[in-house]
Image 1 (spheres, rainbow, N blue to C red):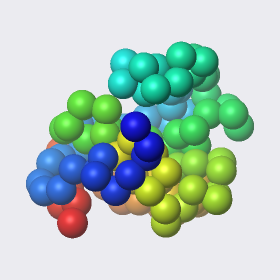
Image 2: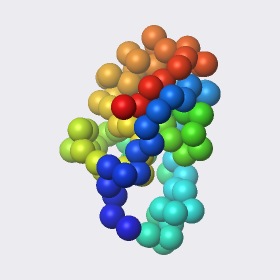
Image 3: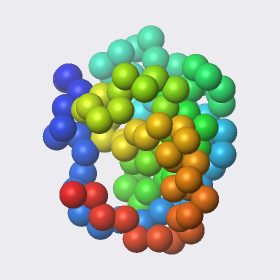
Image 4: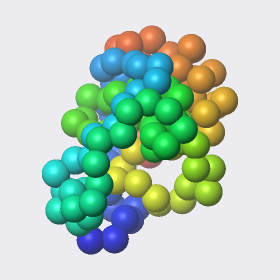
Length: 103
C-alpha cells in the first residue's frame, strides 16, 4: 500500500504525552509493507526527529524530522512531520492534554 493522504485521520484529538529525543518502532502495518523496518533509537537516523507529541489516536504523532524532503508531502503513515526547529517551538508551547484539530 503506498503512502497517501488517506492515512491521515481528520478530527479532534489531544496531546497525550510528549518526548524529547523520541525513539521509533514501526507499526505492524508498516512492517507488513516493508519487513526490513526495525526499531530506531533517538538520533539523526530516527524519523521522528528531535521532539514528538503523541496524540490520542494510536500511532499518530506530531514530530520533527531530520529528512526535510518529507515536509509538506504525504510521506508518512499519518503523522504530521515538522522541521525540527518548528516542533521544538510547538513542543514548548503545547501542554499535555491540549486539544488538537487535524483538518
